[in-house]
Image (spheres, rainbow, N blue to C red):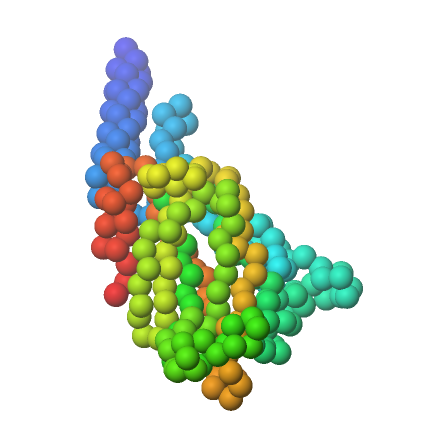
Length: 249
């Protein structure tokens, strides 16, 4: 009889222990959802009584610039052996080593959402600006031959990328273009998990700057991005506010 009571006590203790675990897990989910400052989403699998933590994992790749593919590996350029495939073997990088006025340089920034989660995405294109004299495609001086603030690189945005221009800023010698994912609609929406966004553009063109005004240390056009989970937020504005709050200043 004493043995039966002992067994019942053990079972009761085990049940309460499992309830406490479950209550703790539920509370943690609430904290993660309400906090709004974590760049992670959390799934809770009740049947297995465990957490499966996803992460926001995007990859910016440029197959024509440095040979990188969506999974982060590198393509082999035509004139290299398979063992030589690396970022330094790529086409755009070679072209950028010998710049001249009006040169077209392969550069095709695309982004893949490798996450398990949907997430909001912003892509920025940072174009260097300088006060220079330029000429048009026929060699005729522009702006009456006067010095003018000029973007040193231009590009043509591709159609059907799902990206929309959100803002344009001028800052410290750069023009910064920010694009958000809208799926070709009007409003910003999350990028679905696993979605591959096509290249924003395919090439950049160096400005037709009159010789001798630009030195070899001129910065190249820069492309970057930021992303944050969409779950737990009522709007993209709320998500980006949380992103700024958690960013290291």
